[in-house]
Image (cartoon, rainbow, N blue to C red):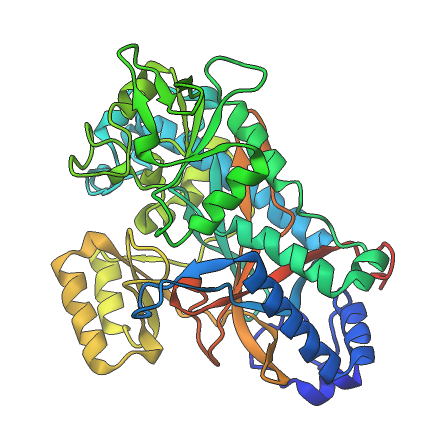
Length: 487
């Protein structure tokens, strides 16, 4: 504990590992006891070993803003984020509830639209959705599930409350980095994994394969599953290739497929065309099928939507699932849960102002210096305003954007999100972080044990996205009643 007290200064917020009295939380105490025995030189040596392993394994992420540098090594911090199992069980139930309700919502929107007719979800919000796809009307995918893989972003406020910040239902990424983070930590701290009860994450590729295989329209014992990638220049290409390899699935680009006259998708192989049962697509709707969406797309498969509507191939996530991946829709998720499940939300939303409402818009325009403003359909932290850290000119520009297109913007209070000790240089510093667990749904549901903890590497920054310079930590869900994690 002395090592921690000498090397760490807390921020005025909730710290994931350290209590207000500067003593490690019970779940983190064994970690810091162990780190105290290592000393700073040994800890720095292990960080160097982690960085070398990342380079040797080719774990990369693309940052497009870095001129002349397409790929960079995955940024990783060796101090893990720790959550007790009791708390995680509550979070897991909340995530399952949320995805179940969202899939019922999507299925309803593309079919009967009861939630609109009953006045729960405004028709004008649906009419203004960039991600609603007319080509998907009347489709009934297997199990009524449209979003099979969801990455929900969670944050903890200063009072300790866990909030859902957003749901990623189109092509959520990051799970491969969660898996690789764990492998690196096992190499760095084998002693802790041997003596402590840290719940595993290694079964995700098997769970993902089972989820995809359950969608097969032929019910084959070993369906042909493919991962559809835009190619090597995509920011998440490492993940595409990693998951395909781990599942034993084909990794292929759009030009590797064709749709026959029988409306069946085939994969070109050295053994000749093979019928495809399931496509795990990692490209956006707009580029998925040039016959239906963007005609200039060279990334998709002409005729794919035709085959999908005929039921000869399954697609995960389905086209059109992004209708619920909208920050305006996000504001209605508590009501969506109540409507479809007749239950109260287990995990709360962040309080949200809808700029399309006159009263909300007036409030937002008068309080831009205290709010975070987000566009409805951007991701990766792009296009948003963090009011307290913005210049007057930036706030003025956002006021014009909001007034020009109020449907496209929401605003939320600036949360003082939690921090955790992070090894910066040769000492520990507090850095803000979030958590992205992954939820799978087909014939059953599964939630990763923890998820990808993303950490802002700049002091005071709230932007954790890897595409904008953030890093990551391994996430440990620990059983405090077992092994070394005893209170």
